[in-house]
Amino acid sequence: ETGVTQTPRHLVMGMTNKKSLKCEQHLGHNAMYWYKQSAKKPLELMFVYNFKEQTENNSVPSRFSPECPNSSHLFLHLHTLQPEDSALYLCASSLAGENTGELFFGEGSRLTVL
Amino acid sequence: GQNIDQPTEMTATEGAIVQINCTYQTSGFNGLFWYQQHAGEAPTFLSYNVLDGLEEKGRFSSFLSRSKGYSYLLLKELQMKDSASYLCAVTDSNYQLIWGAGTKLIIKP
Image (tube, rainbow over all chains, first blue to last red; front, side):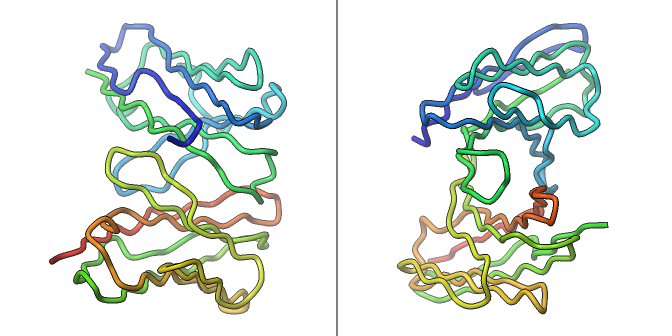
């Protein structure tokens, strides 16, 4: 138990579906992150929120849409995805967003796009 | 470009010692992390090095040489539960976190 909870753990969707991934952290952290993890590849940072404000968007396609309603919750809205978007999506949080402190990860949402 | 290199896979024997290397080429340096990730689980923090030298934490130690752009994670008295992927990551001068692809460690009895 890392203090970061992600739901759903597994998701299968068609290319025309709309779904959302949810992340909640109970650690009192100020920064939250979405990462994409594909087999044998480095973690890819997608979005960063510091104090609910988006501070990074690493050239992520618009079919991924993040939402951060408060410091404890983070969503990733998915629509019109492609099969190559199938991956493990990890949420993480930290005290601040300067990457000098420990990241706390959720267990991830395994996404399969058919 | 920025790059982190670590072996894709390593195999070791229960009770033995294994060293997982990580070399990096980044624009500046503000620290190096090691994370452990068991299959199907969240990555969890193992160590953080910002100064040269060896940091020991129980059976795990992490070494850093900034002049060589090199780190290693040393695991002693290996146990079956140490079978996992080990991720190396470096914070660059812009405080961006650059990740390696991870090393899958297989422990055999």
